[in-house]
Amino acid sequence: MIYQKGSNLFNVAIYIRLSREDGDKEESDSVGNQRKLLTEYVNKHDDFILYDVYIDDGFTGTNFAGVR
Image (cartoon, rainbow, N blue to C red; front, side, top):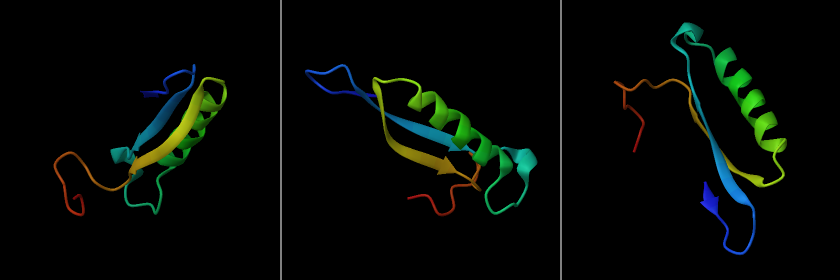
């Protein structure tokens, strides 16, 4: 979270990670559900501003292919 000086607002980001159980789906059910739940949570807080959504959908901690 980044505190904006002079205000009571916080820029927040959502980080969503693929669950192994979802296999090779285009976008996993887990990712879709996480996005929905976390976005709803952020929207319920007047002092949160959704800055960005980061999705790790297809890479594990041991597979860094495509990560720069």
